[in-house]
Length: 175
Image 1 (cartoon, rainbow, N blue to C red):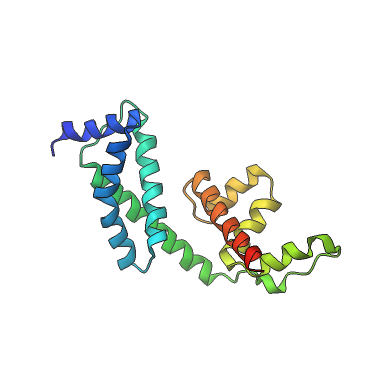
Image 2 (image 1 turned 90 degrees about the horizontal axis):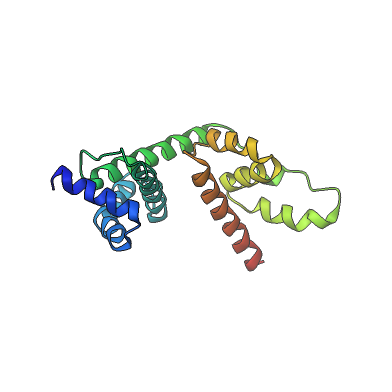
């Protein structure tokens, strides 16, 4: 593949060419998945890392002056590796910090929120921390929290917040 072909990929991304995006996914995702699995991750972790890398490439592709000097697959793998290693460092940092135990949180004085606290106590510590900060703080402070938790941008933070909400919904459905 020569540099001219690299920039043809960029043009396809700029125009939203779905078959080109799917081809890029089919070509690159297996390598990202292998890399994440070899480093202790799961398929959903690989999907998240790939999505963040793909979003970064799309953001760069939007700038008409941006040029690729290597195949897009190299860019995506490198960006996904960076995202995954950053997430691993964050997990290590979080595991070395004492996180508040959801079970130690006081029950609210008024009962209408009791079911909510019961669900929050059953979430993973990461989701408990993320959701408690995401909904208790104003939007501007949430960006700071997203940065503290190791998220590259607001979109990644919102994506994880959505996944944590899905976890809470699953808990509610199970009863």
